[in-house]
Amino acid sequence: MIRLCGSYLRRLAATALGLAGALAAAWLGGFAWFVHQAEQKPPPVVSADGIVVLTGGANRLETGFALLLAGRADRLLISGVDRGVDLPRLAARAGIDPSRLAGRVTLGHLADSTRGNALEIANWVQANGLKSLIVVTSFYHMPRAMAELGRVLHGVALYPTPVVPEALKSGAEMKRLRLLSEEYTKWLAVKAGLSEFLTPKEQSRGTWG
Image 1 (cartoon, rainbow, N blue to C red):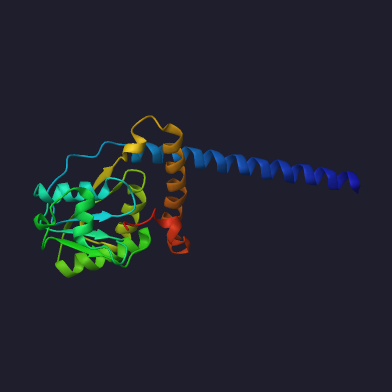
Image 2 (cartoon, rainbow, N blue to C red; image 1 turned 135 degrees about the horizontal axis):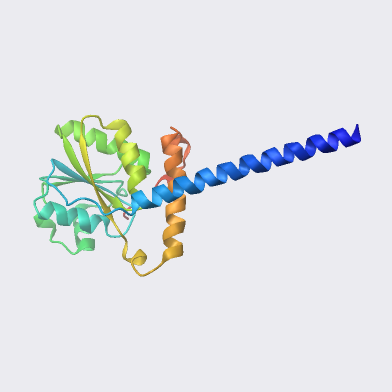
C-alpha cells in the first residue's frame, strides 16, 4: 500500500509539474506576442471626430494637446482627471496657453481605472455623436485600453496613438519588460472578462493631479 501511494504521488507530482510547465510556456509565448504587438510602430496619425487621452502616464497629455492643435480633431476628452484639477492647470503643465484650448477640451472626472476610462469615453462619444477616435495612452497600456474600449464602443473607429515615456527611451530594458509583463497579465484579465475585479490601482497608473 505504501509503495502504491508513493507511486501515485510521484505521478501526481509529475502531472502537476508538466501542467505548470505548459502554463508557463503558454504565458511566455503569449507575452512575446504581446510585447511585439505593443512595440509595433503605429500607422500615421489620421484625422478623426475626436481625441481621447487616458491619463496616468508621462507625455500622454502633451500628445493629446498637440494632436488637437494640429487639427487632427475638433474636440478632446481627457479621461480620469482628479477632481479639483481644471484646464488652465493642465494646460500650464503642458506649456500651452489655455485660451487655445477653450471650448474644445472636456475634462472627465469620473474614471479611476481603465474600465472606468472606457465607460466615461463611451458616454462622451454617444453624447457628441462621434464615429471615430484617436486614442492616446502609453504604449504598454494601449492593448488593454483598446480591449476595454472595444467592449463598449461599437461602430466607432479607433486609431491608437501610443506614447513612449521618456524614462523608457534610454535603454531601461528591465523596467520596460516589467511594465509589459504587468500589463500583459491585466490584459489577459480583461480578455477573460475579469476587469471589474481589478482594483482601480491595478487598472490604471494614477491620474493627473
